[in-house]
Image (cartoon, rainbow over all chains, first blue to last red):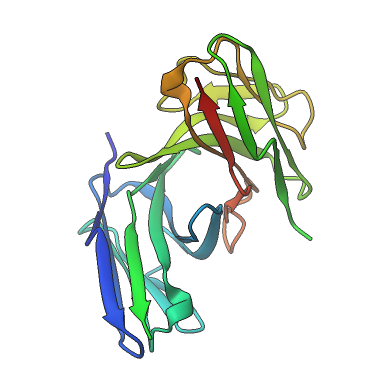
Length: 112
Length: 116
């Protein structure tokens, strides 16, 4: 059974720092992995989607990498800003299904 | 504008009173699903649908029903709500086409449901 873990559960950093959020999964037979942002009381917004054949994706200050063999993905946020404060979740789906398994998220606070 | 719309956004109801949470998407997506989000448990999939008239159970389907009569709509039905179904519910949709961002998941804003 696929399990997704995100460490740390919470993180506070000063503005301007580069930071890395981690996501690990137990079954390497994934179809894709997505990173999401969730603001308090709001829905989830997809940030980056990495297909199983890809190693990384970039969007602005965000870079997500995928290492299927080790069951890991990282989300790199460059030059963090207070507006980046949110909960970040990763989710994987296994080949042949549309069942998405989510991690419990990392709650990020960027201090001004 | 690409949207997944859920209604109601907030609801307090009593045990046993049937309710329906509606979900509609305007992106012609084949795939739709329902999740519930609970503190410490994260997002868990309730039901999903691959296309019209094709639905399947997720990880926590007990106490819920769904239907997919039209491509754009995927209502979640609680036939006899109980307090343990108090939660934040999300509807989501995506295209089934592979590659590129074809599998990007779009979420609704969420529906806060309290069962007393």
